[in-house]
Length: 161
Image 1 (cartoon, rainbow, N blue to C red):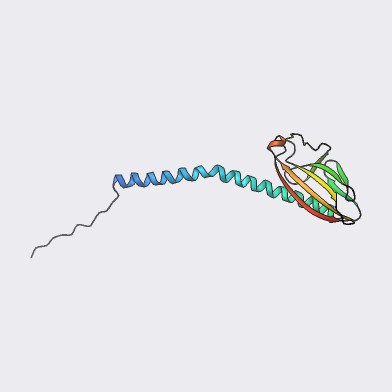
Image 2 (image 1 turned 30 degrees about the vertical axis):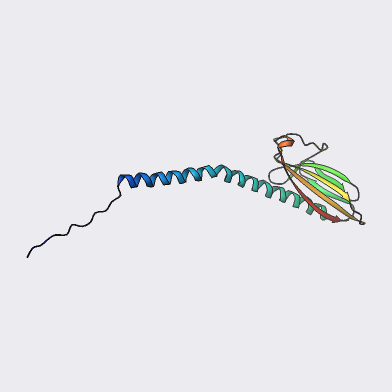
């Protein structure tokens, strides 16, 4: 009787297979890294749009609380300002990153100012209906950029008085 011993099968990756696998992984990583700036920019834009929405909601909420044509809008740095819903007008405010009003300014051309994060233009227009005004809030950001390079989001509502 002849005994033959069976050698255990040793399997391993060849150098060519390892190099190909590393090449595929490197190609995938380069593609993923190329998408990172786009993802970071999109996340930043989304945060600023959310902040703009919250600022507009705050303005609308303050204008809706109250009675009569004159409504008060609170400005932390300068106290308050009154907005007359019965008259057509435009008001300009600067806001901080946390959505708090910082200053009232007269010009419709908001200056470049790194002290603020957002500019809001509040336009009140009378409608054909008695005691009902159209209020539009345009939020522009970033305040530190020239006017031509700012992104503007517009929000509109009707407010009765």
